[in-house]
Image (tube, rainbow, N blue to C red; front, side, top):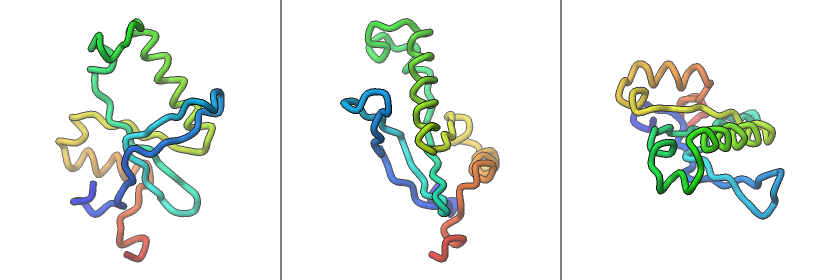
Length: 112
């Protein structure tokens, strides 16, 4: 992302859970796109749905549904969620297309 000239993201940014103020959500990366737009970049891996330790007693379906709820709540806070997979990260053109589709600006577009 940085090597391709896109805006430098903040890492591991926390947001309050609007349904439970005692719990926070953390996104992998957050990009300030300007004009109030923010895009959370979430790296998806199969391990969080397959690794028993990461499932923490939940079924795969429950883990998936929890993730969908989390994403919906982030969206309710005005945060767009862009999901990337290993395949996206290892294909430069595909990654560029994904970043552009979400309107993630290049650093030079923001005057840096």
